Length: 297
Image (cartoon, rainbow, N blue to C red; front, side):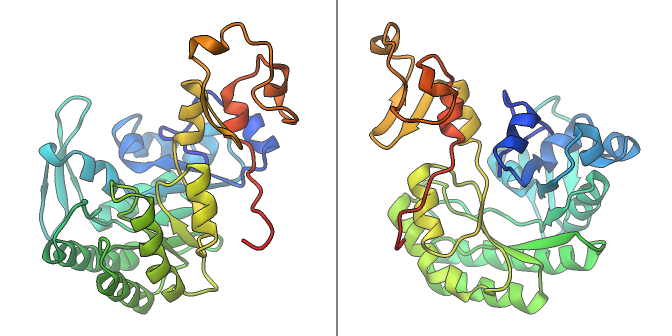
């Protein structure tokens, strides 16, 4: 899912996203809540109308952004109180509040509020964090406004501990969600540990519901996670790579700002069917390319 943090995917026209086959884009609850405000967006017809996007929208709960503001937040059983990174104003986010904000944004897929367990964490820290997220998941489910064509996803936590991941899956499936996300990964644990955690988590999730790995987007991470049963991803890497002149190719990653590329007329990749084949195209063309999964993977 291309990421439109504040309602727009940076540097990529929406017509391009449609041409690329993007079925859904992601918006950020935390940022949209602070600016321009979910009430304003609701008055203007919801996020689809606000950004003229006719397809599905997923909004995260804001939990990860609050997690990243560790010095500006206070966590309690009720929820989290945090200070805006924009002006220092104080705000409160609870599971019920997160559901209301995302409802007003008219998110096709709403995410339950959770606490993103940091890495590294002790088993006790991970257990306490996971248990809190499961209690918040139950409250999110109770507060969610069900409508045809809309859904709520629960988020599996538990750090890198298989027994805690299994406990989290059991709690979420008992509550019941339209889809399930695996959170708390891509936070510093490394690819090998991420894959190991997926291997012990994804098979436990209902096979008839979407399985979403949050915040992952490098080509090798995508292919490896798909091979382990993941269906959905989001990451800022594709657009950020394009904006910062990074290109992913079968021969490795290129930094197009290196001096050796300045006067090189060769294409970024021979045989590439995108505008980058001219040699003057943007790295974003390659960053958004669909990567084929080799037969048998």
